[in-house]
Length: 448
Ligand code: BGC
Image (cartoon, rainbow, N blue to C red; front, side, top):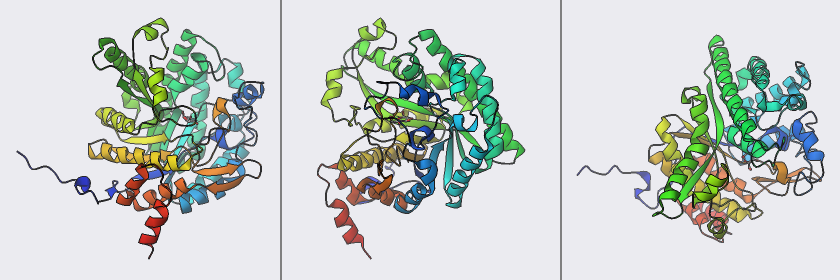
């Protein structure tokens, strides 16, 4: 029998070391943190009573528009991040159709230059859920027209800002955008229509393909390297009853329909990397509910409720990120975890879950998945769409009355992992409950 290759975790007391050059970052999106995005379709929509469940409005956001330097200081000094993922607000840059606001391009140029000055790898998302209001009024992503408008925007963005970008994310979560707006109807335009939903997804796939070409053409002309992809919302699935034929079939359908569909539609050749946003684990039970409504949730709600979840009820299942990475490794492309995190008011839990997720990412790499970076969602507490500001996803707490930033202990743990490019063996203690004191003990042991 061949001798088993020794891996760093053969010894219990070795740290889990990530590959050299691994990207450590956080992710944000413009609308959720900047504030004052008055020309966006979300701005108008959220004003209506009852749209945002906790009654808040995005308003001044967390004033990242003005405080980005302070925030990047935290990302650099406390989180020891070597990269950052952020998005552009299209409605700022093209407030009226065909009219560019050059001052806003200057703003984003300054933001991106600031990151570059810090030697950070920049991942730029071009579209993260929000649209200019003028586009929304013309029918938004449902109309073919959007593709031309989006591609004209991409041309302008590459010309103006391309030199500061390393990784391009053309569209954030096309599947979620389609489902939330046209199937579950929780987000604008709240239009329940399967035909419209199909059109939206198709148009997004065409827009992505077009953007892929534009960015690569621009890169070639300017003698630069470009890595282009999307951020895909992926879910891990478990068959609820292993013996059930229908549960097995349904699990496979759900996996294809959510995790792989956009790659099939847009062609996997138009993805230089796979960007994965991982939050969800589902236990699939029974075909019947699915067959009744094409996008119903064939999920065992009781089982879901039984497991530990975040403040907004999403099951926390660190092993799922391993399964997803290993499954998608079959595309033979670099993988970036473009988002992963949890809404919680319990920072001990955030620490435990982050260490849990990262450990599974490490094991996925050891098992052959080419994972090259991890962007935690999110740097700051922010506007969680139709749920408002109540869910707190931030490594950094923001008091919205004073806009004061207070880094949570989780930011220190994440920062130490990023700094060392490894999970210390002692940090595995965070996987237990009641983690108070572990960090202090480690720090005093390691104080020089
Ligand atoms: C989105 C973010 C969102 C996060 C947490 C992702 O689906 O890209 O905008 O805030 O999940 O819900």
